[in-house]
Length: 207
Image (cartoon, rainbow, N blue to C red; front, side, top):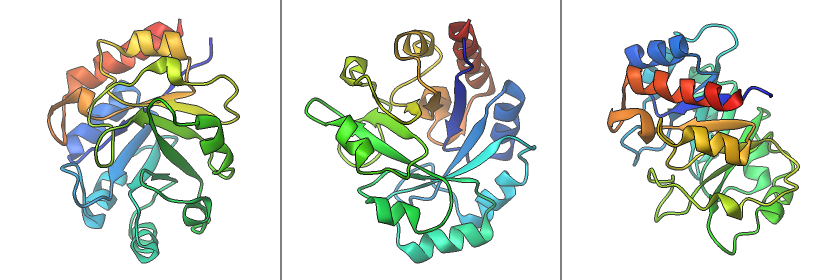
């Protein structure tokens, strides 16, 4: 079996970054969307990103950002990957010259193959639940809506937690999984034991 990659998103504290890395996370997500309770400033994100060892990716999450805002983030935070979670078009995502992934909000009637085709430069397509506003709201979606034939690495998100991630990986076989609220004790506050259990569940499903 191939190894499912793991991103833990919405970290706000140094101890949580260290615990995520120690548990085996492949990527750490920093939320640059001010309405989010997991939002971090550029200074906070820079301090947290400085804790990451080699080969753990720092990901910046944006929602319909002003280009100058992203430019400032890139100047001040050592981000290796950009994640766009709003209504951004291909050109909006590609303008920064950095690798990027695009989030799709999944519900019946959304053509994910067409969505991927509209974002040919995306390194991966992240699938999240459709809720009011942006982000998945900690909700799962119907995994049977995922079509065969996506031509990009699939990143599964939306309501994943230590209890359901084994089934998710076994059923969907994504390239990667992305978790935020499913390993929290409060919004933006991660739990080291829950992160370790989540990652152990992924590894168990990998076989």
